[in-house]
Image 1 (tube, rainbow, N blue to C red):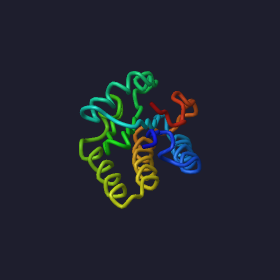
Image 2 (image 1 turned 120 degrees about the vertical axis):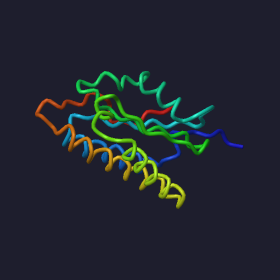
Image 3 (image 1 turned 90 degrees about the horizontal axis):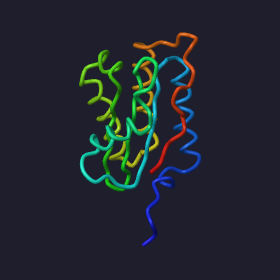
Amino acid sequence: MARENAQKFYTEDEQVQIVNAIREWEKSTTGEIKVHIENRCNGAAIDRAKALFDDLGMEKTRNRNGVLIYMAVYSHQFAIIGDVGIHQCVEQGFWNGVKWVMEDHFREGLFTVGLIEAIKMVGRTLSQEFPADGENGNEISNDISFA
């Protein structure tokens, strides 16, 4: 059996679409959105996402408004977490809503659509709560990170 490779789960074109969605939404906010994809997750996806949040430097944004969308593609797990700044602005229902939208699309095999819809939902909320202020340099790379 061929070795699984998270980096090939999305085609190059799909990866460009995902990065472009992040880039587009970040134009209207000081917030940062990061997508991290890996093959498998041993344990709970939320625990892995929390560990990666620090490893990826997500807590270092000026307004503490970074959001990580984590996916373990071959374990069929994902998690969405945000830093303290965004948590102070939204309720748990927001995060659950993002999760449900992703799940609905993923069940249909629409992995790119589901991820981009999640990025849009997060981006829209970040734009409302943390609008661009002329100083919103890109603090976290828009590129998808892989493990």
